[in-house]
Image 1 (cartoon, rainbow, N blue to C red):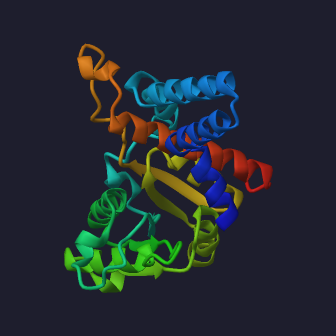
Image 2: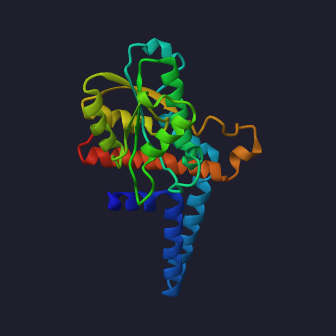
Length: 253
């Protein structure tokens, strides 16, 4: 797992640009001036391309628009389970749990709570373990949910899974063949659906946290300029495409 995360990290746009710049510096030290200049130019071009919204949106929109959000949860009144997939959480045990969740984790939890309030007979399953020594996101999400008024009797946590495939395996033990609402980021939903279906589950997509929803429009000059937001969208999209490819190579989808 550590190796795959390291490979994915280095193939993300910003680390990849830095790696190419490092190669350019090494080539310069070796007096390969022309190759060094070519590598440096490639790094600059890649950085500019991945940090402008037209490309970022082109990359992420096919992922984020694959499934529609659940606007009428009452249509799923027979659903007994709502699974919220974890994201990162701070290990600062002295901070309130609502402040320990990442922005993505907070949005996922908020959507899960919204759906559960509309489906009073359902159980909210909060999933996600510890990665690289961080706090288990499921545990932090459960504490945040209780702090926001959730009924502890209607919560279940899965704090051990380290990735989406393991989350699906734990959910299979809980839900069996029962259909359930699957809550995760819109860009992550296609991979999550593939992995859950491969595990023999019956997920119903309930995407949230669309990164492209609040971006600039084409007549805004900022749309054509490099930005951290666009770079983040590109990194998120490429991470998902790499994750889908890796799962396919391993036969998990």
